[in-house]
Length: 187
Image (cartoon, rainbow, N blue to C red; front, top):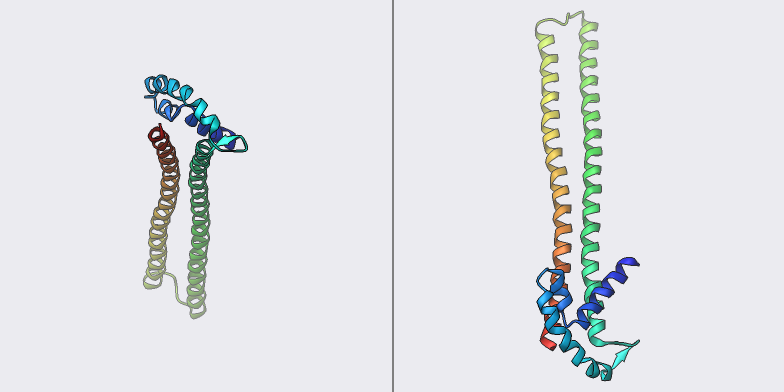
């Protein structure tokens, strides 16, 4: 609820200063705020005669609505970032499960080969030993490839989340700037 109050305060300040409060947020509004303060005071009588809802004018409601739109954009970006972080964690867990399954298959394969050769009286030197080493090397190669693929997927998910957050903030800023422009055009 605290965020709603902040957004409502920003919208109200933007309305009563004719958009100068939004300029001040960007660091360039000190001079503009002084110029529009008189205009806001002069227009106070006209604003009092304007129709209201719950004591607020349509411009004030527009400011509050714009603030809520900005807040919603930021929250949507945050939610997407959290979802991408969760997906990245799930990918890490899935990679661990795949690695365990690969090792189990290798151990099972090697155990089967050892049992067959032992039953046949074949010693584990020469060709049988090189076959086992070949299986181990193939499993290590698969593990290396899988680790690279997993790292790439995780990085992609995390980057997508970061960009979603940045897009939410940019959308919020755009909403506030559009509101400031509309208020400035109204005079």
